[in-house]
Image (cartoon, rainbow, N blue to C red; front, side):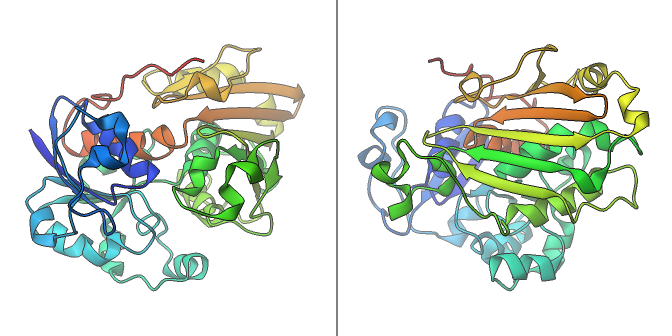
Amino acid sequence: MISVGIVGGTGYTGVELLRILLRHPDVTVTTLTSRTEAGKPIANLFPSLRGQTELTFSDLDIEELKQCDVVFFATPHGVAMKHAEALVAANTKVIDLAADFRIQNLDVFEKWYGLKHTCPELLQQSVYGLSELRREQIKHASVVGNPGCYPTTVQLGLAPLLQQAGLIVPERILIDAKSGVSGAGRKAELSLVYSENADNFKAYGVAGHRHHPEIVEALGVIAADTTASFDNIIFVPHLVPMIRGMLSTIYVDLTDKGAALDIQALYEMFYADEYFVDVMPQGSVPDTRSVRGSNMLRMSLTKIQPNKLVIVVVQDNLVKGAAGQAVQNMNIMCGLSENLGLTGIALLP
């Protein structure tokens, strides 16, 4: 059995991790930390877990965490990098669901997150954990930076077009993305309360969002054309009055070479062996409830003009966009079947 610790067990991604891992046949969760709830039974805070576990929240004890095979950090940015070196030295694998190990460029990281990276050498050794595209690197990683939710939809939505040079115009990518309120985390904030969000729909981060530089860096790694620039892509996120769910609509200009291809066949072939990526039949469009509570990501492709392509990608922002993908990465790191513990069917209605 794989022993697991979760640092930050009171947020939405922390409890989602716990929900998934309690059903994982090869995992025992031994430690769940919380600065504010230490000593309290988990069921006191999350009644949905009554009868599922006897764990209580505890303070972060690095020596206790060193006894784990894998430690997940479901914490604010800046926490994982304070403890990762000590854990790696003890042969404990680290998966961070925050941004500490997502962006390799230190100047970019410090600009967007306002933090000085405390372990830049470990950052260079870490692997960006987009499971479908970095599988071989993840297998051998000691530290994985789990991708952001929006960047997951964008990269998987664009990867088949980018891994062949000359199919699209990189500078003209436009990403119009929407997320449920849980993407902002479990916190008391006026802009997140029900009366502020119900019957409302708004854009945010229009002038710049932290996921933009992550998307730019990641697409540059994916692209077969090493001269392609993604600095000028447009990315605008929106807040939708629902709890879970994410939908990204990606607008792409195809080159003549790209327009001549059967794009549907290209995507179906690219993702043919991917358990968690579903390329929808031509003429259909996925909706968010088709993935709610599951680790599935669904996408559709529609040509609206000879050289214009619309890609629609949906996922559950807390599962494939966070905790589910983190468990997928753990399975890869530990040599397990990638879909172990993650085969739950989406909830409908």
